[in-house]
Image 1 (tube, rainbow, N blue to C red):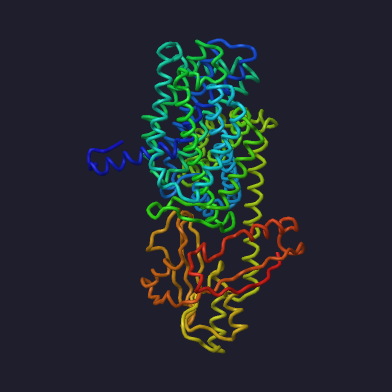
Image 2 (cartoon, rainbow, N blue to C red):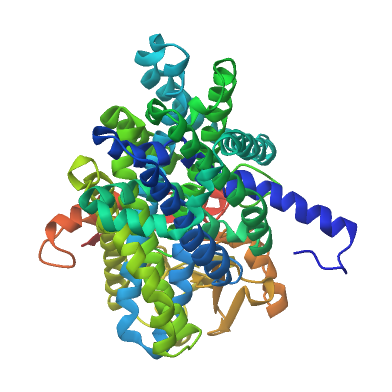
Length: 630
């Protein structure tokens, strides 16, 4: 991976990135051995099993890791970046931008796929902390059965503390995530090697024959096992979503040289143990170690699951931020918890909603085995959405032939559809929960997008184009007051209602008026030289469009300081910012249907103030209100 021309500093930086991504990117998939093999093999316990069945399950796990994680994510999707950023929304933004030019009829399809993928990600973010911490704490039952009644309370206590510390930021403890998780993987590998040495015939699981034979001979049981096998790759989406934080090579290097080998060794070790001791199938992971090491292993497993949960929570903040910048959800409060690392953020409302959902999942399902039923559907659905977006990427962005695109993706789609179908067998055993949750989020985002579009269109019909307004005030000049006024608007073409209202009621206008609109780019980040577009409408009116990427922090005053490059001389310490405050009133005869009105109005009420969202000094703000029927 490292080239001969790299300096020692560059090599050290690369090693630190590899170590960092082990904790953040692979924390989730690294806790899968706690429950994946146990849940898969658990379907065979009623009628007993033979060694070929254990080899079949292990072969399914190994080849799923190879095909889905290694081939799809590590070797393919990590190259499908949007200016260095990855994840479902980043992929949707890139595809949508390109497809609007050549196949606009597919824009809506791409948009809905992206919404569904993002919503399923949040379903994953709810279940991961619950199932990970529960599965680790359940190891206490092996120390002494007296702990059984304490598993759920201890799990809820750990999760409560985890969500409570989010407001303080994780930059101080995150530096330990990589080393601890690396230790976790090496411990898992050592656990597996011990049992592989005792039962070397377990290595036959690398032969895909056993996977195919198992599926061909086990009918419905085989499908149920396959749904549990998929738990072995939960967290694979993190490889793609965290691409912007660590880069392609560190993520690939960590997987190929540490994560994949350690996972395979542990799964083989669990299988070897079960072959020697049939009763170990009840909890093969923890029974791999002697009794005197059980308590330290439970402690290390709990720490590893906390790290995995932290990584998922941080990922949820990042995805919510992307959705907000793309206009899919209302403006929400964002707090930056580190002065050095821009990507470390805290979103209070998202944190509270996740906490409530995670605790409810724990109380509803009670055990990790019950949660496993709900887990697979969210993850398989999310992966299917990513593969669907990959079709549009390869066909219309990379401009490959239809034959090449289909021949590349059909095997993946068929495999993921099999996994999805297998998990649908758990639909009424808990699998309905993430689907309902995702559907609810899709509904909210769709209503927000539709409502916002209607409000902008209605506002544009109720005012005049900015060029016409400039001619009107030139023909009949109002009273001018010294200074500069900045009017924020979502519609750069028409006159902001705040400017019209200010002139109508106060009968004055500032000497200099700057109409500012914020445009979110389909790119993750926008360079400073492309940050501003300046258009002088008249001697009194200047239109400025500020371009932010969907991963940028929208700081309006800082962006306006770049105006000197465009001839804008603004004394930002003495300007007045005019912001609009809309009060929405439901009207079933206009806009959205009545029930959607109420949802849109409720969402609008939780939106963060523009002063906070755009980093505008509140003591320089003049707010003008208006009622809008929707």
